[in-house]
Amino acid sequence: MESASRLFAAVAIMSIVALRLIGMREQFRINSLCPAHESGLTKLELKVLALYLKRKLKTVQDVNLAIGRLGGHLNRKSDGPPGLITLWRGILKLQTLVEGYKMAGAAYL
Image (cartoon, rainbow, N blue to C red):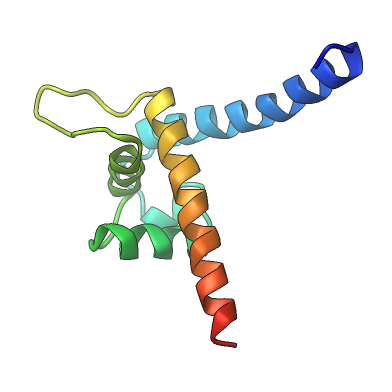
């Protein structure tokens, strides 16, 4: 990370991740009552998230709170919606869960 080319590559990758998170947060704010499949997650991610939390995800707001829950959001009455850092932590955990799900499925093929 000492050369300009390596720093540029790191910034490029982090920018893509940041754009996905910001896009998801805005989707959660604007379309909170839309169906869950419009949340920006893949079908597999939605399935794994629902299985892990043992609840149905009907709306985008349900998906937002579920990802927030993975990231440490407590969802108390006085709490606002999950922020970017909480969503980031939740997405990281969700990606790990999805990889584990894929590996477990591959073990039985």
